Amino acid sequence: MVDHTVGPQDDPGYLASLRTPSMLGRLRRSFLLLSAVPVVVLALSPFIIRIETHTLDTPPLWSAAAVPVLALVALWLAARLPLPLPPTHDPRRAAQRVSEAFRGALFLRFALTEGVVLAGLPLAMAADSFAPMALAFVCGYPLVVTLALPTRGTIERIRTRLGPDAAAYLWPALLAPYEPRLVAE
Image (cartoon, rainbow, N blue to C red; front, top):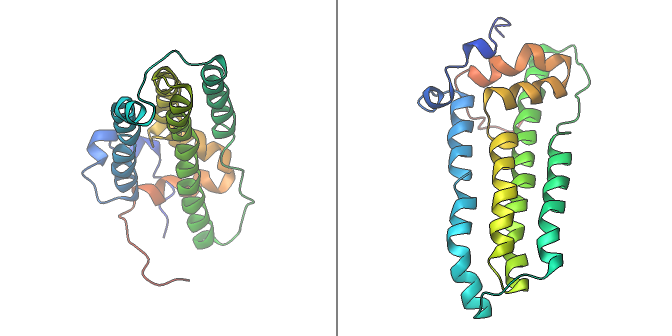
């Protein structure tokens, strides 16, 4: 049974939710770890570029210009995710669909925004310069934090995009204790 009174006001907060057994706590722990990947790539990239190209020079204009274009495309696409779900009359199915659509949208948003950061590495290698990687991190990492981390604001923006079923079912699904499905339905 879904408790329709559960909503964003019941979110214990980002740090407090990390210690809970809820779906939201698991998602936040996962995305906190995933958000460290771009930082590690940035830290290792000077060594990768130096090993690959043996030099650190000024980037050509195309590699520097490609990064903001990628960031704008990722911002445009991520802000339009997810697509609205059609309403359903089966409450159990609606809750499951909303939860799955939310998680899928969150991971897709993360992939798009992290892709901006990761694209900096081949651009830096092609340009024989660390500058495209640094620019990619500066343009991409704020997108990761604002569009992909499951903060209350991000959850609410995605909930609004999902449609009417999400208003009733998303927060209860996120704050319920996580129960892994062992059997495919």
